[in-house]
Image (cartoon, rainbow, N blue to C red):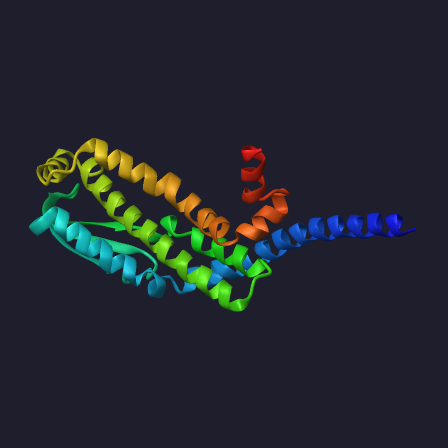
Length: 221
């Protein structure tokens, strides 16, 4: 009877673990929807460090050819990159070139991380710490994306004149291609997953059914 009770408890434990994973996925999805609303409506605030850092970096790279990055007056979640480069538009007018960059395409990992963190069963203090770390990491990803997209647009979207100016500042086409691809396709998607997995190792090991210590002991044996 004791053996049967042990087997029953073990079965209940496995069922509980499976439900716990299902619960995490459901809660993470619900929290993520809420996180997307917060992320979008507060984008002008949590994106301010990105705008200031990207402004400083582009000013360093492009020198006097760069002016500033400001918030687009009609859409506060979008940046308006202003340069001092004279550009002749299709209507024949010549003005300083400016263009739009959407920083949110590089920071969608923030609400994704928010959903995963809020759906996990760690303490509120630990959740706050993970979100703070995630915000810093994703902000760095966003800065990278804004800088390289701006350089990509100057180099490839406005003709040979702006392309030559970017190259004159020592930024090669190969560097722009690599930086832009990493900032658009790789970093935004992987950053929130890496932060959550590395900060929730016990929970991840519980779901996959093995721990790093067990694997190390097995290899040693």
